[in-house]
Image (cartoon, rainbow, N blue to C red):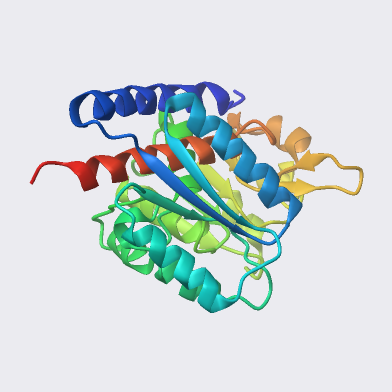
Length: 283
């Protein structure tokens, strides 16, 4: 089974669109996302444009703050604080990675936790670890949405996550634990990686290495979630999983492109809607 992300994302966006219409009708509120992009990194520019199109499609306002010539750390913090203070902005997205010389951790921490649309603020990650998530990071949330949509059985499943980043691997492991999966975390320095992956009923790969998981590393019938996006010298986009060799062993697999990637924007917009709902609820 090929786990296409598009129909899952469309379902999420339909729910978001209905929620936006409800907020506008009941409270006169238009959920608004403030996007901050520093530098001229081409993939980030493409990504910001795609987010704006998706926001427009569901009625979320997007305010882009683009600084192609760069900012100092102080200037960046000032921009984020001004968005924190603006009641018309409900969600803030700081596009990563930041240019060299800027402190990513300090910038993320400067975002008000209640406006953190990416779910990466230390307070929101702490809530996730505590089992009381407030804002869930977009890509891991998208992975769970795909697994649920296609009917994966997570309770008690042997689940392996390759990758330990704050953006994907660590929060994804916490989400799987909350669903009562048995989770093993691996990474690029794991000894005998294949010994772990061959046990996995569900294998999630987010290591950032093209084709690192091959068919002989996968259990027959496993569900494989490929979160990696790598561009080859030919320009072709591929994942961290060697799709052709793995698909003959796996019971289900996400394609790259067309799998998890399309979910990230959908979950970002859902987070923005939830933030707007919380901030404008009658107390």
